Amino acid sequence: MSKIHVNGVELYYETAGSADNPPLLLITGLAGYTAGWWAQVPALSKSFYVIYYDNRGAGQSTQSPPGYTMTDLADDAAGLLEALKIESAFVFGVSMGGMIAQNLALRHPQKVRKLALGCTTPGGALGVLAAPEVLAELTNTQTSGDRRQDFYNRAWFLVGPGFAERHPDLMAKMADVSANNPQTLMAYMGQLQAVTTHDVGERLGEITMPTLVQHGDQDRLVPPENGRILAERIPDAHLIMYKGAGHLYMIECADAVNKDLQTFFLEEKG
Image 1 (cartoon, rainbow, N blue to C red):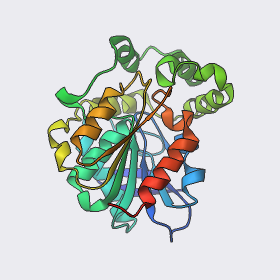
Image 2 (spheres, rainbow, N blue to C red):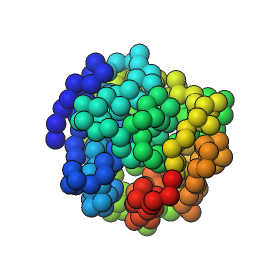
Image 3 (cartoon, rainbow, N blue to C red):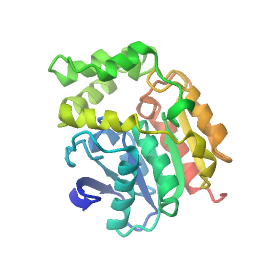
Image 4 (cartoon, rainbow, N blue to C red):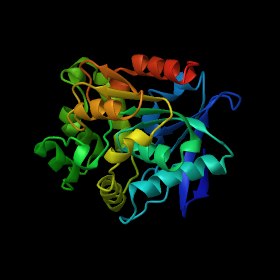
């Protein structure tokens, strides 16, 4: 558990696993922070040296006000690897973290050995937006004041149909993570504004490292068409759709997701 100055901000990061293992950088999404990786880190740290961190504007990193872009966030990720003296790493980014990962791969390709993109979008004209009622929830600042309850109120577009009823224990765990999120409203709006700057659709063909695209086929926040577009536009990318899963597919289908990531990153081809 450490903080490091990178690209003009202070980033909080954690590591797990042996430093002798190949490095794997995890990049979280909008309003996410390190605690949100509880379904991945224990499994992936058996095979990888896992580095996971709070993006600027989240968790214990600098709570930056609006005014930065997706490329700034990508440069933060590259700077973190550089500061940790990691020449290159496997990279897995989800949602906004997937947007950061795309920009990282384009701006700093030498830092990315292989790329895994989860529940994310190319942005811009090529990206497929969520339904208006979902987008309205993202920008709604009139919350209940109870972050745990706010999570449950938004569950209808975060997890797949029936998941909340079948897995109240996992829902409670996710609600706890949300309840302990230290992000300020100003910092949230800064991240949300940065998301609107993401547009790499015309450059996807420039991503040359081996790429895996994962998506829940019931994702209401980032529609699954986005995953198909990424897989079609990124040369030789492989697509895995998780049946019945929503935006939080990496928790809904954690065992399968972790296994698929491990197989992809460690396979010799590519």
